[in-house]
Amino acid sequence: MWARAGKVEDHCPVATDVDDERFLDRAIARAATVRLLSPPNPWVGAVLVTTDGAVHEGATAAPGGPHAEIEALTSAGPAAAGAALYVTLEPCSHHGRTPPCADAVIAAGVARVVVAVEDPDPRVQGRGIARLRSAGITVEVGLRAAEVEAQLAPYRKHRTTGRPWVVLKLAATLDGRIAAADGSSRWITGEAARDDAHRLRAESDAVLVGAGTVRADDPALTVRRVEGRDPMRVVLGQAPPGAKVHPALELSGDLGDVLDDLGRRGVLQLLVEGGAGVAHGFHSAGLVDRYVLYLAPALFGGHCALGLFSGAGAASVDDLWRGRIVDLARVGEDLRVELAPLNCTR
Image (tube, rainbow, N blue to C red; front, side, top):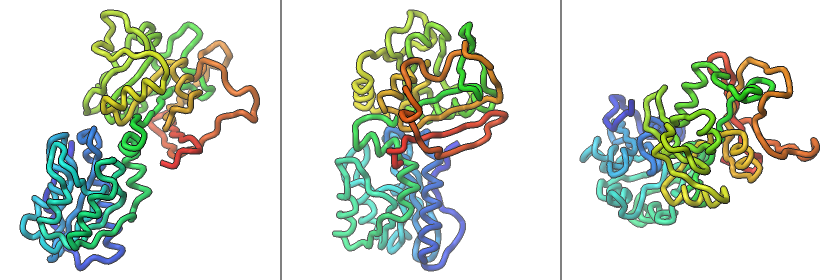
């Protein structure tokens, strides 16, 4: 399912500003193809344009494999000399699982590098750009920065705060109810929405539920409806022996401490799936970076059904939590609404 590096059979004249945007857009699209493959490394795309106009592309492989720049350089071979390189994230300048990409770019003789955003990793933070410039390479930074910052939001948050990007997933009727009075909740949303929710699981490094949800629903929390890896399973509290969620990491205590723990374990994105008490805990503590609500065209039509959150809420309309809608889409017969806190710029 993931595209690999290779020469793209087209040729382009000397780059213009419009070409810069186009090639960086191609790099962003290439990065998206490895979103499920690269973590805990950032999902990065690169496009290299040689002096004769040939285009070579690359995307970061699984941990331990080549980074995007190396794949593009390898595809081009000696033709990389004098080329322009477009990359979504600053080339690394340190030895990790692989050697520094900045050194490989210099050794290949690349003449110009266009970088969307600087790498926030403390081991890099501009050092890769500085190394390229000190070698005489022209480096331009900032084109398509907003798009790449959004694409790499989980990675950027982890590298700047040590905590994962928190996605709270909720499924409800249009009157805001997630379960009937008898506790039944399967299935409020349709097949397409459940497929999309499994996509969210697949791109998350960990998925978290409360022990109450485990006892009530016995979820497996695996990726089944789409292609992708299973996330680490995390339970707040203690899961009963024999529950489908095992093997799971069982944590308790302050939610901020929980996020710090998961961040130290390399979790870039955490998907919080519930239940209502856990959702309220993350929401009321201001720990959610994205809310993803699947709304079904259904109504419980009364106050007995369970609401989205279980806990004290706003006492008056003046105290309402307000966010901004960053995406709205129809998924099968349901609506998918993505919300961000007002103070979240990503």
